[in-house]
Length: 255
Length: 216
Image (cartoon, rainbow over all chains, first blue to last red; front, side, top):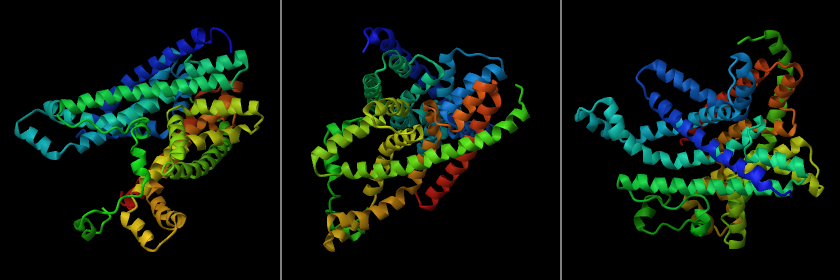
């Protein structure tokens, strides 16, 4: 391997990957909340347009969308984005569409009585959303958002295809320069794994805080590698235990 | 934005050629993912730690690293070990292996969902372990997870354009070469995007209907 691999390629690449993940995550989260809440609107046109957006962006491929933004937008609309921002736009819009489904699901899961109680207290719709519904829905959203962010982190590798100098791009350059492929791709895979691991840990902390703030018990460890390190796999590996009580047997045993 | 219908019409046969390759890669990748996923799911339930641990670490590693980098890894590293595959085969291996780690989780949920009474009945009939798995548990587990597996096929279809980056002539590659030779970008890329929506939207409606039907 060449000297200066880390200083010239990998470290700047890691920085670009982290930046891309961060910016697209913020953008995707904003889109997810905006669209997720808008889909519960009483106006059919708002519901239709946001529903259409979600189906289109979930239905197509992030890579195709990125190529479209790169090659079609400058020609069609004579509107050239800096590669980095075109990538953020493509990733944010794609993952915002996925995220809006998470937001919608979590909003729907808030007990109807909570809304009714807020109406009875004559809260305005905005107050109801901000002070009653969202505080209960947000902790529910964090585990699926965690998964979504890991997916987003992995999807940032796609930007190398449109020449944004992320870690995957650094790997391609390094391979061309040195002819070594095993070493560089192994390093890159481990780097992504470490980034994914750190992201999961950060989200777990956030989840603990969010749950604690509304007085719920902290979640059990089921994140990345937790299943392996905490030995819960062993319990799963065994056959399901026989039902213990006579009641359970009487009710069919199964569930 | 100027849309040129002549360009679109000329690109259509190319698009359909590419679509066949895209569908082929997705179908073969799915078969590989379903088979490998079952292997991982069963290995993760092994009573031997030396089976569970390596498979668990491997599955977590593959699941938490990008498909694109795995694809490049296979494409560039395997030939240097004198393992030679065509680009399409390499793409199918990468897609299949990556998605097998997700599918393993689906099988796990399916197996957990089989009522305890079924295990007990198999024990009561003095069935051997292998027979219990393949005659009693798996047929019930797999029936439950069909819609979830279908969703992963759709996800794989949408990830399949990555194989264009190692030169497989799928839909995206057709659009790329069209752009590179004739400088027509608008029509080919837009048509590829629409083609994906036209396939994946009805497919996900079908999966949703199937999920409702199976009562999930």
